[in-house]
Length: 99
Image (cartoon, rainbow, N blue to C red; front, side):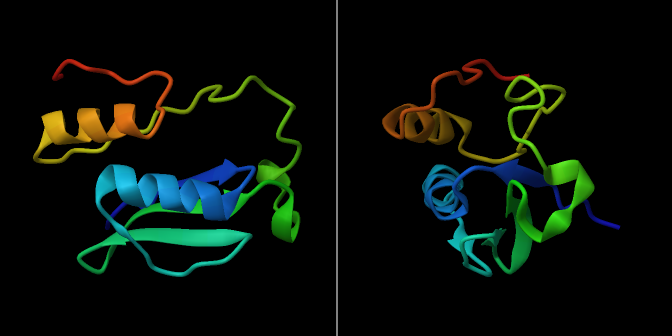
């Protein structure tokens, strides 16, 4: 079994471009309501538009503070490169120490 995290976002296409650049990945689906971010044919992250497809747990983007209860963690080589890329792509907060 392999986890395939899915997060709800306001702008799927813009978020897709950002995550592709940040994680050095590609689009695996494309679209304004749903996207798969892939690397080497494996899904790394799924993006879903708020309020699309009547999913009860992906509605009302303003119901809770942004990021409430959500932590995305990617294990990767090239951590320093990822930090540089995050800063270059206007990441507001980014953990800059290794865990």
